[in-house]
Amino acid sequence: MSRVFDLLALRHFAPGETGVRQPFVDLKTLGCSLTCLEPGQQVKPHVHTNADDVWVVLEGEATYYQGDGQTCRIRQGMLAVARAGEVHGARNDGPGRFAFVSAFGPIPVDFVDGTP
Image 1 (cartoon, one colour):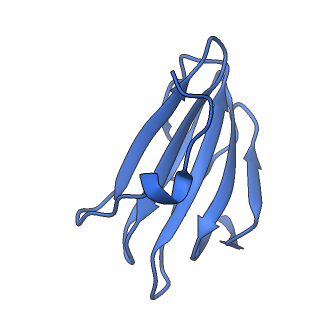
Image 2: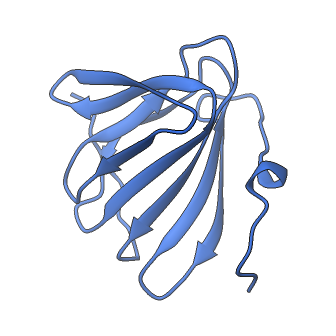
């Protein structure tokens, strides 16, 4: 397994509701994926009951879901943290593309709907 990744080269965008999520690291306790969203696409609000999830925004900006109806804007160069059990997700409601790396663990990670 490679230890160095060219994240910009890994980006892949496609039509659909949820965009493209590409796992690229699978360690004993940590996983990483790259998610690419076209305008209008989203990562639905969700929680991981057993894992923390940290997002680093590589490109664009989006509305980040924080749970309890709370949102904020995240953009290139920002980091968003969701502890185990905290609602998170994002909607690309801007005119351009949005891409972020997610680092999560421990793995395996569950995915529980967090829609209000």
